[in-house]
Image (cartoon, rainbow, N blue to C red; front, side, top):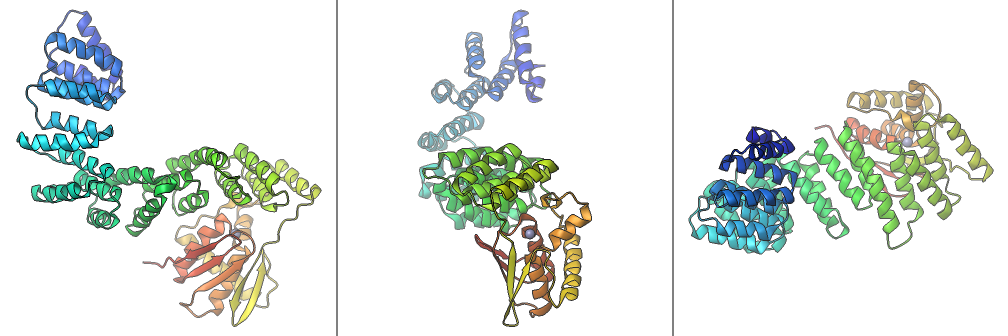
Length: 491
Ligand SMILES: [Zn+2]
């Protein structure tokens, strides 16, 4: 019973059953001890674990192979590495499982040198080496920057024929990335990505990207992101959420949002990861050594809009109004947040506020060079001589991008209109009119360069990416903050 509970994640029940067994006067055997100790280590309860250790000591089982290994494992998982070491040292016979508990415990608790020394001792004692042992030891090389030991271990692993094991391959990659050898690491990623098991190394990428989630290693994080894109792992919801997470943690909400936009079907996990980022980003902005500028708050506000997070949106727009009172972007974004929640009254009051405070909404317009002439378009502005042709092209492109998965972000249209009208409004954003016009006039294969005076909106960002895909051309949009480069040809 105890073992069944423990193996089925009913850890508390395993412990109460064990206590019941002791109360009834039965003496537990080594299997009962092993199972209940495993339950303690899963619950990370060193208090109960220590009491059971005492009982095992009294019963004479504490040095027995299974019980001892589980005790060492329990202590190291609870971070009590000295106790783990004591149990381990006193065990008269050790096998690969007990050695692994110890080496893994050392590495996980940051005692990397001890982990490597133990591995060396173990080699002398002629213990059978399995892939778990190799993984634990490889783990210790990265943080120590022990490049030579790491690469010797790699050769050793290859000789043993373990390189093909997913877990070993991951541990090797993890080690190389941590050692800063992106080339060797990505070589392994290439080998692994040919396999079928994405899940196994998403956890690895998770660990790595989490490690990169501070400014010091952001560069590596960006390199990893590039690798993720290169091997098409970005459609894995888990991997993409981690990327969203990483940029969010670094306060780079723009990058976070861009990564989010690339996910074709965001799931609950991805959304949560973006929403979770808002809290962290808020703390990040507050803890910055310099005052957040309008741009930072604008990115934050844009993220709030994406998630429909009204409270944080209000906070951000308040801060933004203090820094940059005439910034119409803040008002517009806030009114969009309300619109997303269909609070039309609030939308109206923000508009009224803008009017009262004399905030002028910058009229969005964009322009494109065609036939050595600059053509300027505004939102829904179609008084151009080629209006008919442009309209047809816009409809045609819309149909094509819907086929490849475009979902109009109708929530971002701050008007109380029906779905089709909202789609039409989005489709007539000035930058799209520019692109449609350029598609008609510019020879195929030549890049389309559009410039605009306001920020490209989230919906256009995803639409234009798909436009470049279906039209097979390069599109560059220069808005008021940066260049957006879209190259995504159909494979
Ligand atoms: Zn737009």
